[in-house]
Amino acid sequence: MKVGVLTGGGDCPGLNAVIRAVARRSVSRGHEVVGIRSGWRGLVDGTFEPLGSREVSGLLPRGGTIIGTSRTNPYRLDGGVDAVLENFRVAGLDALVAIGGEDTLGVAARLHSEHEFPVVGVPKTIDNDLSATDYTFGFDTAVFICTEAIDRLHTTAESHNRVMVVEVMGRHTGWIAVMSGIAGGADVILIPEHPISVEEACADIQRRHERGKDFSIVVVSEGYELEGQGDDSEIDEFGHVRLSERGVGARLASLIEQRTGYETRVTVLGHVQRGGSPTPRDRVLATRYGLKAADLVHEGRFGRMAALHGDAIVDVSLEEATAELKTVPEEWYEVARAFFG
Ligand code: F6P
Image (cartoon, rainbow, N blue to C red; front, top):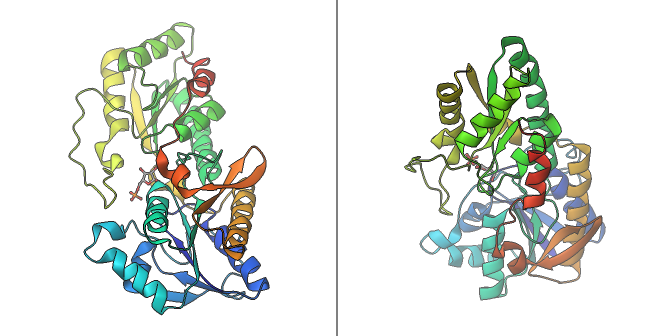
């Protein structure tokens, strides 16, 4: 078989570990593996590169993706889907491994259901918002980076008696905020799924100061909606607004300072959360997902996605995985909330 691999959407730590695992297992079975440049863009344009044993050597600790990524949506381009199908055929490909989040895998699911396209999926995103899997790879590394940042902000907040607002990524879900907030001991966490008001947040901070703690750490997820906040940010090909442009962290910090009178600063972690080497947990998860994807291809089980259920790697339908977002359940937010104020 000739197997194509693409990485789509925002990059994340562990992509290269998946590529390595897919290639190693497939090559050992006598298949040929080809990298598709820059996500779906590479199938629209027909840009490929070999992925043999030499090309995937030394990839395990490397962040980013060696085959590039993009947020190209072939369904939004004139003739985009036809070009994908045609370039796939002309390149002599028999199967595709699509590594991505809801957008990339949404395209894969649609191509499979509408054209019987031979694709399998691997769940990637620092946001951890994909249904049908307990965890996506990349999330653990992002939480690790945010937790380290919160730890560092604690010492400077304490020295200056300040409130520190930390804005983290996560798009429409607050997984990164909640997990890093719990791990870093945040005093208040604001997420889109369980939105406490700015007044409640300020009351928590004040309560904390009244019991002698004159600094506080506030974690806010970029998707948290502040009252009166407009949405004129840029929209990508999948219809998402660029949340970082709304500056929720800076606006929240200024509201907290106005309402409490406590000196407040903001740190926006941004793309630092997606960069660098994956944690051991993400390397292992990405490797297991890559092997599973290669197995699904070898068995001709298309339209499936590798997933983590408990400690087992299983497969689920791409449709199920992309049907809805996995949001933070109340019980997780309650764990965080037990330490507010
Ligand atoms: O989906 C991953 C993610 O990092 C989100 O958390 C964030 O909103 C978005 O991508 C940022 O996208 P870009 O890198 O295109 O600015």
